[in-house]
Length: 149
Image (cartoon, rainbow, N blue to C red; front, side, top):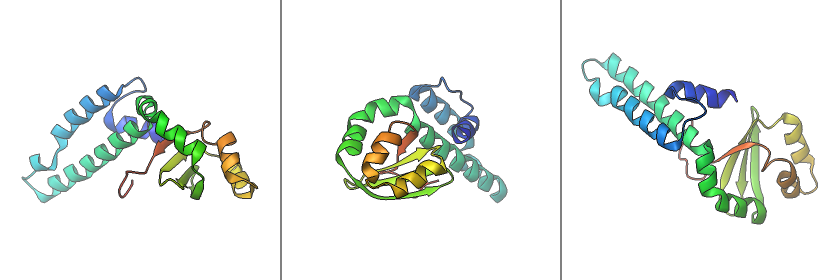
């Protein structure tokens, strides 16, 4: 998926990076690009702020879609997708954002428009999503994300 590859490139990691590896790389790069180290000019400080913002976003995204994160949160995810109903959803550029009745929110990546159209037209969207979306697409929780990317 292009989005994951873009974030990996920003941090300079590959698909074999563990959560521990991500954290080490992130901390090392942030030490280099922290805006407080660039006080000599406004231009360099602004460049460092932009770079650190990208680094932070990439780190948080990669952590949120990492298999170790999914493994650690599988119980909560399974409870949400099996017990809560869809409260709201929106679709943009192959990303389906689902808000559940229990307050949790998840984004699903790589969802084809045809699947989204079927979800919209389904007699029971919850059942359709359980069968065709929840276990078939890369996801991440967006429940605790403030602002977004």
